[in-house]
Amino acid sequence: MENKTSVLMERYELGRLLGQGTFAKVYFARSIRTGQSVAIKIIDKDKVLRVGLVEQIKREISVMRLVRHPNILQLHEVMATKTKIYFVLEYAKGGELFNKVAKGKLKEDVARRYFQQLINAVDFCHSRGVFHRDLKPENLLLDENEDLKISDFGLSAVVESKRHDGLLHTTCGTPAYVAPEVINRKGYDGAKADTWSCGVILYVLLAGFLPFHDTNLMELYRKIGRAQYRCPSWFPPEVRKLLGKILDPNPNARISTAKIKESPWFRRGDISKSVKSSPQTKQVISSNTNSQPDSPVNCSTPSEDGQDSERFAVLNAFDIILLSPGFDLNRLFEEPCVQRESRFTSCLSPSAIISKLEEIAKRLKLKLSKREAGVLRFEGLKEGRKGVLSIDAEIFQITSEFHLVELKKSNGDTLEYQKVFNEGIRPGLQDIVFAWQSENQQPPQQLFEQCLENESQHEQKLMPDQQPQPADAQQQSLQQLVMQDKLP
Image (cartoon, rainbow, N blue to C red):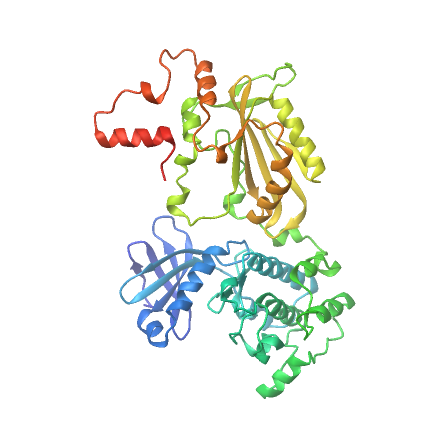
């Protein structure tokens, strides 16, 4: 297989062997349909069953689906046959960071950039209750842009893995990078243990060699337990100070990833380069987000006072139905997740709605920028776990006196979005909201009536009891579910 091209399940064209371990081989591959380059990890089922690693494989799959971040290797899909399991992974063209460090120490600004990306990704994992437990340069890959990607979550643990004492107890990891409390086998905090490993990696990037090294394993563990290491003369004072806080043998006194991100040395340089938005979060909300491509939008509508010359998307009855939760098909393809968007209706004019949004942005210390077609954007002033948090607010016209506003996270971390929305934006909007869509599973009757009055050219009103009876019974059942907004 290493010498000739073969096709996997008529979907991927397998190429050269990238690497192999005890239970798996990794091949370069290309999607036949899209031409996208990927890496495919092929796992032998018999070997996995023989040594009892089934649960570990399942955990690795669930964890990689949970931690979607620009600096974490993405799992595209999982396939299987009777004898093999196939992980289709993001292809990291640059190979292992270890290969770069093996040639010698890195320049300070290069090391800092990799460390920034590492800490941002690890902090994101911890926010999702995931602990890697085997962080080392061999598990840090580089893409074609020299951006870091954390890989190999085979030894990872989740919050649910903790025992009644709130600690993890499985001893795992690579000796030179493992935290002292893991060696002691008395239970440990997964986040604190990962932070220690990050400190060892930072030392290796700047020095070109390990802080703890000995041919005798017990002597190595003794050095780790006492944090017995020396910084080379070229280490800046700020790095020495930061390493002293990270490589603290007392986990309770060890610095957290959040505090590391606040340190002066870490913040130096352009951190924004180290946290990129995923492709799906870069898109700005388009006019009429959930409607069909040929739906009528972008009609020019002045405000009540005649001062506004904004162009707002106009929604008709069909658009409103398509915006209802029953037509959200994401649940058919994705696992339940935190809500990333909300919609509400208001009887106020666009200018009044915009004024309220500006007031909220000022109170929450968010930057509010105005965009075309009734779209505004809230932006945080600081970097979050997945870059700067951005929230788009788009105003849709239903009638001249009735509007729908959609709030949607366009960039940043979903949990951070939920916190800002629930604690600041939603309470601040309370006095202008007619109804939140999430609280009314079917659109308000008044909304339909006003929308229909706005379309007076239609002679028939679009009401459930006036619809023509479908000839087919199955179509009739579906029609009722649509009007009641009870589709799954």
